[in-house]
Image (tube, one colour):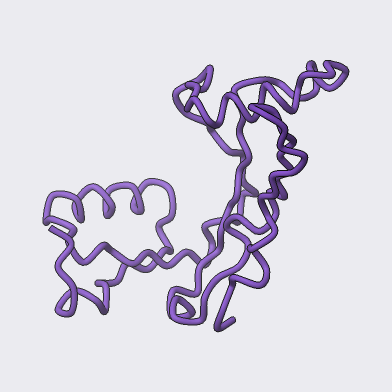
Length: 137
């Protein structure tokens, strides 16, 4: 799409502000869902994970849960884990195509090739078409 603003402009709404208090409504779907046409060449698959520093299944009955989430976001509260291992279908890498960063070093490319050899031997690795156009460093 040419302009994602109409789809994202209402994603965050602040209502009923009185003094230092108010309500905030966040629609998480638009974040990472819409993509401007200028990035269409990337032809990518996206995974959007919504991760909060609390377990909403355990806290769903807590009337202050929304406030806890908002305060966690505003205060940049750390997550209770350092990484997340996402389970994928066995054939997820069957048609994988990897585009290296324009600033990828030779050693980084070697690491990517080693990972491909081990986990996705049929994957294709290609140089970025932006390599001669942009400088990321």
